[in-house]
Each structure stands twice: as C-alpha cells, then as structure tokens.
Amino acid sequence: MVHAATAPFGPLLRQWRAQAGLSQLALAAEAGTSPRYVSFLESGRARPGPGIVLRLADALRIPVGERNALLRAAGLSALYPDVPLDAPLLAPVRTILERVLRGHEPFPAWVVGPGLHFLAANQAAEALIPGLCRLTPDAIVTLWFGEGPLRQLVVNWPAVAWAGLAALRREAALTGDPAIHALLRHALAQAGRLSPPPDGALLEVPAICPVFRIGDQTIRTLSTVMRFDSAVEVTTASLRVELMFPADDASETYFRDRAGAAPAGSG
Image (tube, rainbow, N blue to C red):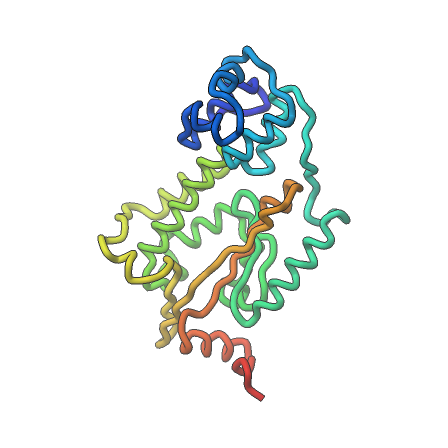
C-alpha cells in the first residue's frame, strides 16, 4: 500500500480504488461525481475539497483511521479525532464494553483493537485462554496457529485456521498495515501446509467457529462480532467485540457449569 505520509493524494486514491476493485467509472458512480474528475484527481490535475474526499472514502469503504491519512494527503486537515481508549472522551465506550463483556457471562467474550491487540476479556474468556489480554499479537498468532495445547483442543482446527488466515488477509489488504502483514506471514509460517476445507464442508455449518474437545466433552460454538459502525473517532471505530456462544444445549451446560451459574430461567 502507498503510505499517506509520503504519498500525494492521487496515487493514494488510485491505490484504494485498485484495492476495492473498482474502475474510475464505478467509483465515480458510487461517489456521485464524474469519471473525468476521478481521473483528474488521480493524475494530480485537480485538487479535492473535503466533501469529495469523504464521498470517495465512503464509496471505497475506507476505515475511519485511514480517512485522516487521505485528507492529509490532499492537503486538508484531519476530521476524525484519535484518542486513547482510557481518555475521558471514550468513557461511554468503555462503559458499553464493560457491560457487554459482563453481560455475556458465562460465555467467552473479548475486545480486540488494531493489530490483533486483545484489550479486555471477561472471566469466561480468561478461563478458556488464561492470560489472553497479556499476550502480544505475535504470541496470539503462535498460540492459535502453531503447534501446541490450544490447537490440540480444536477438533476442526484446519477449517478454523483457514478462516483465521482469510480474516488476516482481509485486514492486511484493507489497512495496508505492515504490522498486520508481518502477523499474516507469521501465521502462515506457524500453520504450515494448510489446505482449504473440502468441497461441501462449508455447507455443513452456518459459520466456521471452533469445536473444542475438552476432556470427554465436545464443545460447539458460534461467534459474532460487534462493532461501532457509526463511530467517527478512530479508536472507537477500530474496536471489535467478539462474542462466543454455545451452539447446542450440551455446550451451554458446559459453560454454565464451569462458571458455577444456574441455567437460564431456573430458580
């Protein structure tokens, strides 16, 4: 990816457009402008204002954090604030995260920031993967993709690892972040030779999620991701909350028993 710190607006826009797989005609239609103007912007013959930059960013689905870079490359001021998660401005966000994690007990949940940094986890997640939030991104990749105890617990590890690599590839392509590309290379090295799931295998489940074998129990899970899609602050927009659910009654019982909680509706 062209880095905005050194690249003028035109090449950066062209890079994002190529990454999105859009022609100048298609991008112009999405952004409500003309292909001629898009061509002039990419060649440097026209200088954009903030309005067209934001429309192009919307059309290209550029993440909030990268939009500031695009604005700066055009010689404009950044529009999106970027503050640390512990800043007073983000107190409501922290409250939401804490409530979601706590409310999801006794099932695992965690908060992931940019670069595969695990920022917070609930007790169920810590019970499943002790010390999760103290692990570096490299250690997370080694734990998940490398040979070791966690990999041995995941019955469907090849399919799960394949899906994980696909997610890392998407993030690397979307952000162009060298750190994510390095994590992807590390994951590929750890995973070794990995074949895609066989034809028809993906039709047997609604989503590729881990199936754990713990002792003599098989724990089936489904996961979903919560994001702040309407965020206009960089840190908030980059967060994702991953929520793991039991996929059957036996798995729900396992998590509830492990937490010492009574089944829902009892009492």
